[in-house]
Image 1 (tube, one colour):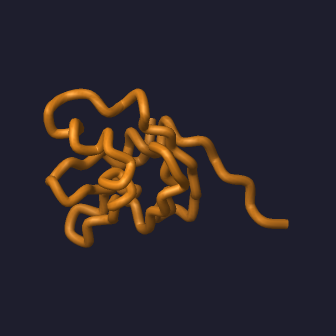
Image 2 (cartoon, rainbow, N blue to C red; image 1 turned 90 degrees about the vertical axis):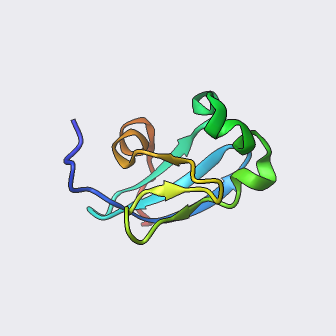
Length: 87
């Protein structure tokens, strides 16, 4: 289980439905959300150009989109693949 105090601190669109997320514990994880985008609030995110507008909300510290959609930081952390640190 993920520590509930972990927050998203940065997000980068990697193309398609993939994001690279920087977390408050220093972890960096790549997250593929293509199979997670179901339900009415996520319908607009199926447009890659809209999906690419992901940002970290400075009040909730989670990844959000302009239509109000968000994905829990714990979920992003758990399904994300750790990015190896630069040598």
